[in-house]
Length: 190
Image (tube, rainbow, N blue to C red; front, side):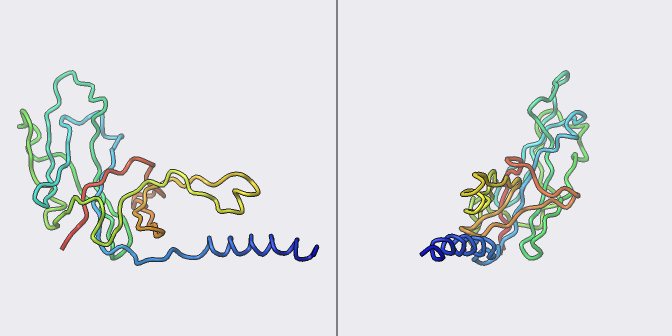
């Protein structure tokens, strides 16, 4: 009885540890994703603010002239990213000021050059069931929670489909996007 009483909890812990280490089930994402983040570094010197909207499947940038003396608090420039479903990598898309920035008096709307060749869907879930998600807290497994009472923080942005999570890591040397930083724009559709 003593041997069974000691080995059963150990076997259960080993079983839970093995189960948590298994790869997630499910198919990998089939659709690429365009999203944006705030670019806090370039905020101070921008003569225009930008709003990104999808119209008829095309990503449009709406540039608005900043009023003189406006300190631009709360209005940040945007960086665009593409998660490529084929390569499972994230790359930054070229996005900057319009060529006619000095001529803007009100609002100028034009297609984003880097996404002109792709069609976007603004459905929150991709056709294969994935959606953009922030992973604020990830449990460290039953073993850590039972014996240590803690999980581990898992900073970053993912796309999820049930138990399948794909972490979106930027291509600029950082290892993750901060929680809440990524803003959904659209899924790339055929």
